[in-house]
Image 1 (cartoon, rainbow, N blue to C red):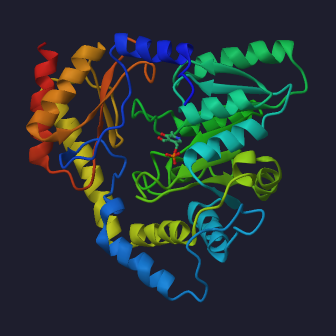
Image 2 (tube, rainbow, N blue to C red):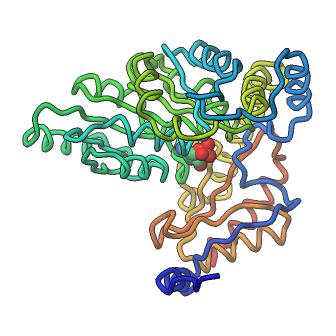
Image 3 (cartoon, helix red, strand yellow):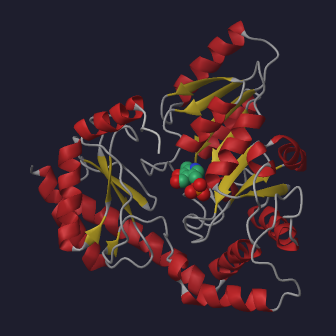
Amino acid sequence: MSKFPKKLVERIETREAKNNLRILPVRNDLVDFSSNDYLGFASDVGLRDRVNSFLGNKPFFKNGATGSRLLSGNHPLYHQLEQFLAKYHGYEDAVVFNSGYDANIGLFSSVPQRGDVVLYDELVHASIRDGIRMGNAKAYKYRHNDLEDLQNRIKRIRNTLKNLEIYVVTESVFSMDGDSPDIRELIRFCNRHSLHLIVDEAHAIGVFGKGLVPKIGGQHQVFASVITFGKALGSHGAAILGSTSLKNYLINFSNSLIYTTGLSPHAVATILMAYEHLQSPEGIKSQERLLENIDYFNSRIEKLKLREMFLKSDSAIQIAIIPGAEQVKRCAQNLRATGYDAKPILSPTVPEGKERLRLCLHAYNLQSDMDQLLHVISKAKDG
Ligand SMILES: Cc1ncc(COP(=O)(O)O)c(C=O)c1O
């Protein structure tokens, strides 16, 4: 084996010195306050049974997709899923990708062209930033959820550059802060200034029904929405929702769709059945329970006077800011010792000094566990 390059060793050592080395955690049996399985679908036996009987009734059988969707991998379930997604979420069309990461790099690397500009919220997900970096357009970030800053940047760009398309990118629920932009206002703003708005709805789907764009009837006013199935839907994969022209474009130019093996029939069937499950009485009950838990959690934050420590969030992602890698890791360790799994988020995922505990609430979390969890976290506030 060749010698591991010195430069790489140094990067790892720097991480170690800063106490923010990443490792792959082993699975545990702690109470889950860390996964994105907001509705509990990932381990729902009823959903697994639905998938098995759905596939059992199909005339074709394949364990794998067998190739790219553009070659042999476009099995009939893809068509069924894309038709369903467009109708259910209320968009003209849908195109399924292997993951949210693939969808974002495929979209942002291929759509904005040289000479165009992408303006993205400073807190957008790494997959969006990676996609933008792979493309040829200029890109600038604007301050988090700050329409005024966005407007100033657009003025400056329009004063210097002509004949360009401008893309504005945001998330409807931010993955590391749990908060949301004012989507209605953003859509109005983008319409007024002829901007193409792209909204990543990964953490909104299933938590806020069909997503926050459909909630205000904005589907035909955004350029595209990205939805993912690995979070509240408890499965895997993603889709870009938008116009049929966009779909045709992506099929032709989006490398992360073209040059990869498609999802297996089982994976696509799981997504279809997860949607069926979402609309079933059990699925509706899970969504109600999740919203009740979010309300309860927020009420306890107020009651325990922890508001200053927590970011304001009505979503399933709740954030306790505990500055310092050492401090936030200690708090997570105390939680583990009490039986709770909550992940510390360190630099460089978030800026140094803004380290945090990322708590994910679920339909299946108990109020007594949320109480106990907050009790342990409140001790970090007192040092
Ligand atoms: C906002 C956002 N977009 C996209 C993704 C990527 O989705 P996936 O996990 O399906 O690759 C994530 C994943 O955490 C996310 O938080």
